[in-house]
Image (tube, rainbow, N blue to C red; front, top):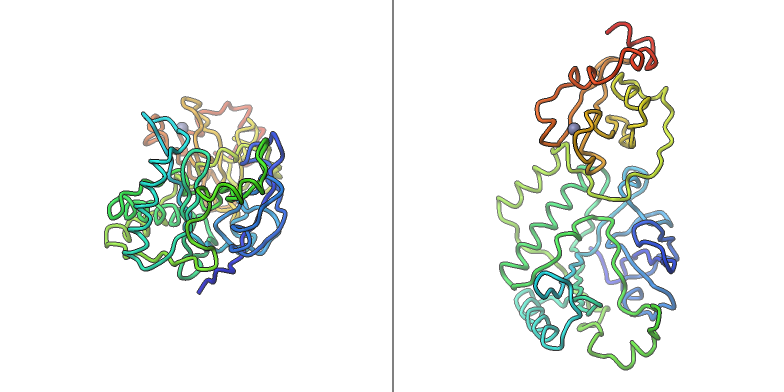
Length: 331
Ligand SMILES: [Zn+2]
């Protein structure tokens, strides 16, 4: 059972840094404290606990213990499809909807208003582990099912882009350029958490069979692991550890984007070069059955549908194959 004292990592962002790239962890504090503190900087949190001091991301999976502890929902205020500053009228309509949620579930959510909408937060009845990439995919599917329930039962439209387990959310009382945080706390009760953080309720809706099936199905999907835009950072890979010929060929062309933490697959840019590269996991080379073998090839893009490992091999020149190692001569 999580308690209101589940810890969350609070991060400070540098003035001009993009939230996804530069978020050193300041501290792990209780959820209650994170939500009620007036932070002297632009502070963000993640909806999970982890046993490391830094921010967790896809690349942390398998390297530390990550446990999802909250369900955090962003509700954007949109006028004709564009994000807009919440009006008083919009705020009161959201309050009404959240009140209905509170009454139906007998649980008190945290609600606070943001620059372009509102944020809703409930705790999970027990932590959900993210130990594998399959867990991350299942979390994404589960989050989607939860948003469906919010929409269907409470007319609350959550932002589907927040289904990433590692998403950063801005805390309610933070210092941002031109805004004095104490002013914000004392003189804008309108913006403040609707329900006290020490009494944060539990989110535990009943999922139907179709939703449960979708969550299980997400575990076995090979593609769509990550929509992260932060996955094209330079990777340092020892080519001698790439035991698939295709992986070594891709390495030779500078196409390797990363290796799965369990070593079972290598993420590459598509050697056919006919489309944008998409998510890191869109184009994958699987470990071969025998060491030095060709390896399996799978590209999720439509223009690569049905292309095999042999097709991929044929994209490389004989000289590249020779350079990829003596194993090339045997093929
Ligand atoms: Zn492709």
